[in-house]
Length: 95
Image (cartoon, rainbow, N blue to C red):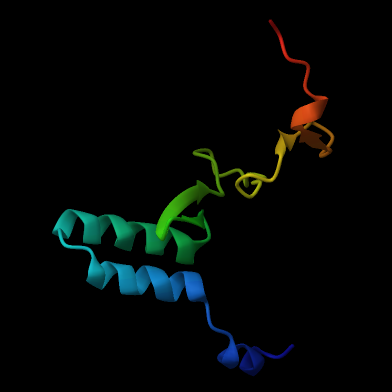
């Protein structure tokens, strides 16, 4: 795909965050959404939407390491040290 092919792609998350900046009432909320949008553009934050509001998902640790992130409610807990998906039913429940 050439660089020009991306001109027809719409990033709905970015568009929704930009619209939300103008919809929130307080300057503090506007600054918060702007910071979220900035992190999204930089690739350090992922966004999930819950009830029309952005839920921030860190994609990079404080040390700069990329994190493996699972979508909400996917029925898994994370990854083991070998990169295998750990599902909830595979975890022993302690009493």
